Image 1 (cartoon, helix red, strand yellow):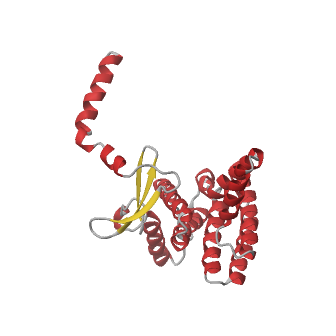
Image 2: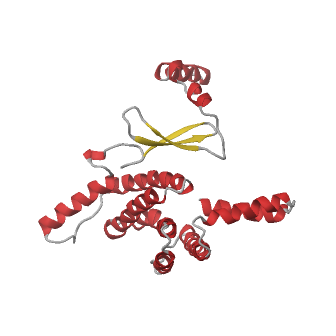
Length: 267
């Protein structure tokens, strides 16, 4: 089939699969993209609260309970719940977990699910929804523990565990901020110190991403500790104020440095 014929066939197929009445220009026009205010929580038709993020070319929508995509894999709330249920059944039958092993398909499903939770908790963190961030990062920390213990493939295991330092620091930061908001600075400091010790005590993984995330996460948490001492519940706020002053005084070298730090802390 000539390339032009293939292209025509592809366009025709797309037309019938995605008819014009399904294009979303009306939705996008109703909510203009604003990089300073790209998120909102709204009630769906059935009353449940959902999270939406306006991107330059579209809209993302997240469920706020269970999986971000709202799916129920095998009837379970999450793939992780399904795996942990299989582990419980195995342990009850065998009298222990020796011999339990994740199937390759389960590892892939867990990895994909962890990414979905990551996408959601990044947005929630930027919205100061710290309790929800704690829940989502707890899910991914449980996921790491399951992979560490029951995934026999080092490559598959490391593909997720290399990012564990980052998950720990996001979890700890969210917890610390909730304590600061409750004026429990001493508890917040303990949370941060414990997280630093946990990250530094992680088993080495032969991955540049692991080395980078471990160093960056420890430095980030030390920065959070400084903010906690100053009773500022959001470590990004001071940097943003400094950036505004740098731009105002046309100190563009300093502004570029601050933008890099803000980007690192936001990712």
